[in-house]
Length: 109
Length: 345
Image (cartoon, rainbow over all chains, first blue to last red):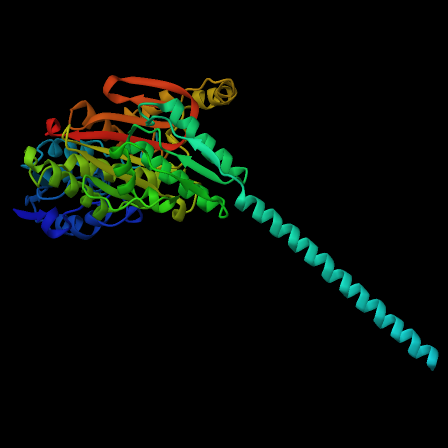
């Protein structure tokens, strides 16, 4: 299993949604760290995302990083490929999984 | 020949007389202008008295009346003196709004002269001292602030993670003895990032001000007595009711509401409550967005933060009491205040 730690591999202070919102955005994390690792997975291999050790997460960061990945590659594939570790706040895992399930690709209200 | 010379001399004399008279006219005009400026400069300032409970969340009407008087008086070109002597209680939200209004006045009316005094109440004085208020107004000497219970007012334009982290560290430092681990306080950080992002993306509207004008202000105050930290976050944007996505019927209704607002009726409090509950009101119209305010609201519901108030335009929502009110006086922008206590851990 491959592993990615948001604190060690990206930033201990994650920001908001887009590059334009400011530093350490969810889009930046997805484009530069998460997606390359995700695309590098071999068949059946999993990626463990370690959420611990940061200052906290805004919903927009989590949604754009993980929901955004699901919008590009599909919810089922992303859910089956990613595992999450969050000892500090286990509720984050449920929250992220709901963003992936309900990513609603491009759907306008 | 002699006649021609005489004519030229007359012409020169006439020209010199004209120039002399012109100089005299200008001197007179200058004197009059200088007199006018002196009259304005030397005139007694108009005194605006702050209420004894200087707080938007606890004394909305009187506090907003004070701010309206302040802005109205300066708009008329008058010199102003802010009298804070009677203030016996001041909350972080009022300090933040005061500083942002003064910034607005200085940028909109560069000639403005604002003086001020200090409250008799020592605690209120120290809060203002640490906030940087006295540096903005011409006030009597006030000395140095002795404690570190107040985080100096921060402001920014985008989502600034370092500033949010410095606020979390401030909370960790003060609440550590009460059991807050340095790894905790994610609610504080997440709430601040949500607020900053809302300001950057929504507070000034899609077609609103340029990035340079999209500013937020933040203050945090630690109370050793109640062992809590009070936060206030402010932007001077168009407000939540103007930026939430409205249904067609609501848009039609809005035309009616504009009329009703003129006679003191509006539904801003409903729009604020709706945005807090995440009823698909993001103006981006993308279903996966608009989760920031609901997240903050959920922290309140889970008691991870306490005493959450949201004030925007005429809407006033006290989330801890599930109370939403329509206020007759309009608040410019959006204010969020909340407490983080040891009990929230």
